[in-house]
Image (cartoon, rainbow, N blue to C red; front, side, top):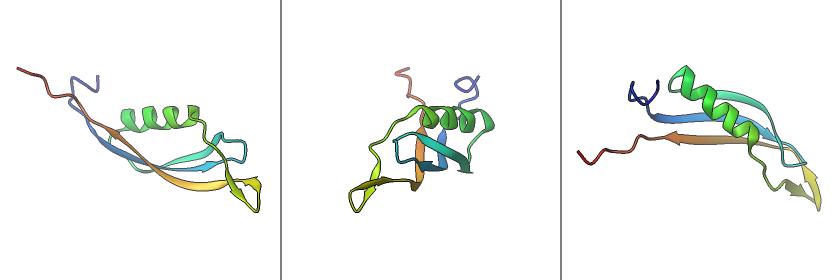
Length: 76
């Protein structure tokens, strides 16, 4: 379990934001742990964006996205 193992860090992903706002072609550029990397990839695949535009038309956009995973510090 990630919490028990105290795994945290920032996963860096490459993705194409499609002209309809969905996400495709996700790749891990810099991972932390295979389990966190997969969680980041799945989460990003579910996100929806306002599409980029060029000359008034929606277009695909390549993006690099950083997803941080940080454990909360316990008060004791």
